[in-house]
Image 1 (cartoon, one colour):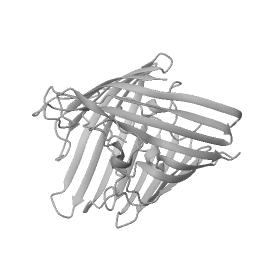
Image 2 (image 1 turned 90 degrees about the vertical axis):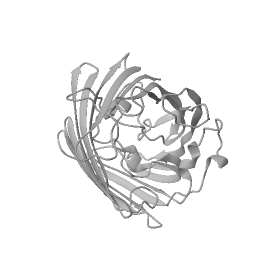
Image 3 (image 1 turned 120 degrees about the horizontal axis):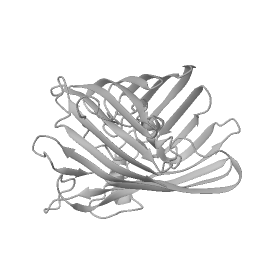
Image 4 (image 1 turned 45 degrees about the horizontal axis):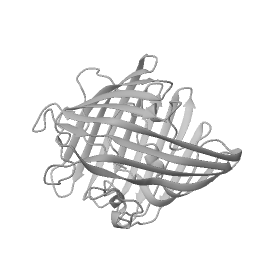
Length: 351
């Protein structure tokens, strides 16, 4: 899954959107919950298109455009208690005159993409789901839990897409859970089923991946108050990740600690926290802001401190078919990672 480029905030309360922009619109579809069981075969083709990107407000790339345009879509099938999904995603790649990829301020040089979800599953009458195939890990399903902002949320170092894995979950009721597991993988773009040219390295995300198990639980202990806890364990000295969070109405916070940041050996550990809030200013218009902090304690170099605020606006209209978003990010405090302040704008279309 594509990493977010850079994330910036405008001072004060410049607007942002709730994380549920990808889960609560009528035209959008949940990535963690498939449709309810039916006695007949049902077919659903859905997806989204985003056109826009990022502009730095300072530094060497001040005023230069970094493209974030993407498209994704897939086909969901269901027959009785059985279901499946084939889903692709991809994005444009900027390239300079020498052919270097991800060149800010230059035009489109190519496209990168592939299947990020290709799985089948079975749902019991009690709504417990068993899934097998290429999919988001359980912690990837809640990657933005508690983060109501549009674009510049902090990316926690849990495993994202897995090349092949298994998942069991039940997302109904006051107590919800999801657990996923994946073996080691060594799949690259050279082995990929789909390739969009020389700039397409989509499948390289599965090169030399550690085996892992991750999951989470959520519990609604009172009306509008939810607690969350999650963990990930990796083999080959890949470390462990632990996180907890709480959400009350439109305010949320989460903290985490990774004993060896990410799914590969990183020679250090990371601790961090995030707090976020949102407000519906008008029907379909959501303002939001967040503060993000992470301290990566390296065994070989200076500690990396991430500390920034971000805020923006999400405007949803056309019965959930269209959305316009703006976000911004500014480093604060002892930050030595975030870099130049940036703004983000994008137009979305859902089908």
